[in-house]
Amino acid sequence: MAKKGASAQAFLEQLRARTEERFAVRTASCGGFAGFELEPLGSRLLVREAQAKLYDFDEEALRPYFPMEKVVSGMFDIVGRLFGIRVLHRPAAHVWHPEVRYYEIHDDNGSLLGAFYADWFPRESKRGGAWMDAFITGVYDPPNREPHAGTICGILRRQSERRRRC
Image (cartoon, rainbow, N blue to C red; front, side, top):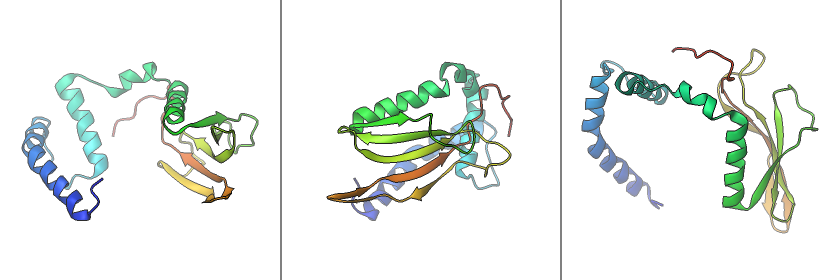
């Protein structure tokens, strides 16, 4: 939308000018963070602390109202309506762990566009963090099309896991 880097930079500077004072007030009311550089993860933790301190709000209290399967199903429904695709779970597909799910993406004609494995939960035998990777990079060069295949790995906690404090 910005079309030029200078436009994007100007937007960010305007945003900073409009929010910096209020940000300072909010962070000071939560104990601040003087003396260290705030990284993206740190800002998220700061927001959680502020929500707990100022509003007695805990995100984890919402978890029972948003079970993962319903959230994923809703997400696939939204992308289906937006992009005219269908994301279909294929439970018969071979997976490397019982928690892994395999999905195919089809266009409105039923043609296979791609597929991915979703491995949402952490475990000892899995690389840490949230990440994604391609197994096969698809090609779209009309009239030729080769589907893409990839994996999405998350760091979601299971409903049964206790909340860990950082």
